[in-house]
Length: 104
Image (cartoon, rainbow, N blue to C red; front, side, top):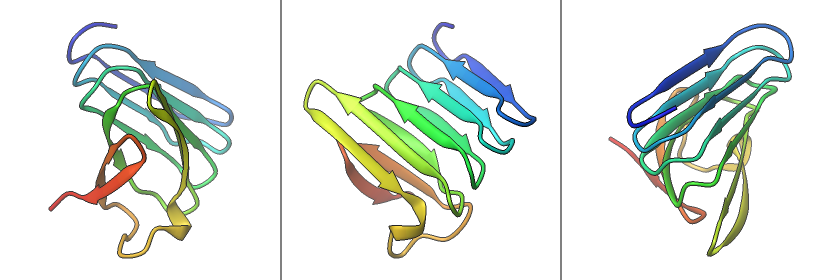
């Protein structure tokens, strides 16, 4: 918790959360979930995981099979990695209120 915090979880059905701007949350185990709430945070889950954020702007490390749910005061979006054209496993995307931009 707090500015620039980090959280990581591994293992089956694990959970990771990070609050505060510019934080990071990663959960790589099967059926795991990673959550962020602060803007400009980075989120990553494994191929069977769920990434969730309430931040208006975040970074998502794309993993094949992963899903990102974003909920802000401007709406709600569900992004599915396997349906994102032009992205490969491991690419970094900036997500801003459901709009996806590839980070070089």
